Amino acid sequence: MSFKSLGLSEPLLKAIAKKGYETPSPIQTKAIPPILEGKDVLASAQTGTGKTAGFTLPLLYLLSEHPKEKYRPIRALILTPTRELAAQVYANVKEYGEFLNLRSAVIFGGVNQNPQVAAIRQGIDILVATPGRLLDLENQGALSLKRVEIFVLDEADRMLDMGFLRDIERVMNLMPSKRQNLMFSATFSKDIKKLAYSILKNPVQVDATPENTAVEIIEQRVYRVAKNKKTELIIKLISEGNWKQVLVFTRTKHGANKLCKKMVNAGITASAIHGNKSQGARTKALADFKRGTTRVLVATDIAARGLDIPLLPHVINFELPNISEDYVHRIGRTGRAGASGEAISLVSADETTYLQSIEKLTGLQIPVEIVEGFEPDPNASTEPIKQGQNRSKRQPRNSNSSSRKSNSGSHRNDNRNRNRRRNTNRR
Image (cartoon, rainbow, N blue to C red; front, side, top):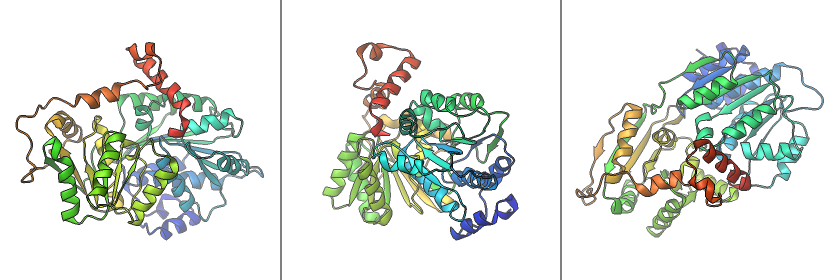
């Protein structure tokens, strides 16, 4: 199978060849044909398997084949949960569409909206956006979605995790009912499938890989360690291994800052990236990391879906995620596009339950090692981390007291949505 045999146009084939790709990945082989036929598609694929190109290439083909008006209305909308993912998708759109007469733009919060509005007013065919900034600019009258022909919901499971259901519903109501819908994600829970079938019409379901499995080429390993020795161990592994590019995940923003500071004190160049950082700081940290100026990037799960770092060799879970599916996305930052990668998890006694959940989800028994001098505490409790659990369920600090006391799941979602709209710069 070749890209040409999929029915893509010469300008697209030229752009693909320029990037050095020769053979389509399984998700691209399965998803591109039905999209080109104009069908709705529900696609599940592991992160790092070419999912973005799986919808970007056929989308560009369809738009380039149809006549364009002198004034370019937004004809395709790609909705993503995070700024980093929006920027990554936009970069792919630009690269693959290099030899096509199509215009595109990306919008997200945390930065000045004026350049984004100016780009839209010049007329664009494709808009990549996060929900908050999209709804904000639409409410200001800066953009219209009334001419959208193709709608892509990327990383839909993450959308729900972040409480964007209401925003998605609002966006749906702003577009014409007659359109092509595509939903791509690495995982699909029952809630996601329920959402999918409320959006998609007679969809073709594409499963390139089993749900919630990790890329096979990634070498996974667990180090059992005492909780208070984690920082020393991770510094030892990075220093003695002479690792030059390491992505480290923590559970909290405070934890990311604290670990980053300790690494710098140990002589390891490091930066932190999380929701409390400005977009400028996040962009600079990621750029320095890709360039090799910074050896270690310490991140929270906000970065798990949106970071595209070619040939990233090492991912370390300094703390295991509360949500098992997030483990798949974290380690999926390595082993991308067929490259090898290593994923290491530092697991203390109180994370035992999280590890068991991850192994059940992935169907794997991850090899365990113990480093001399960093042995786990045999007397430590294996009860799940209370602080992390409470944090994941805690209401936003500026929610009213009655909302915090409510046990209603939908009520909690409403509070999160109101809080996000007050703080759009965090998207």
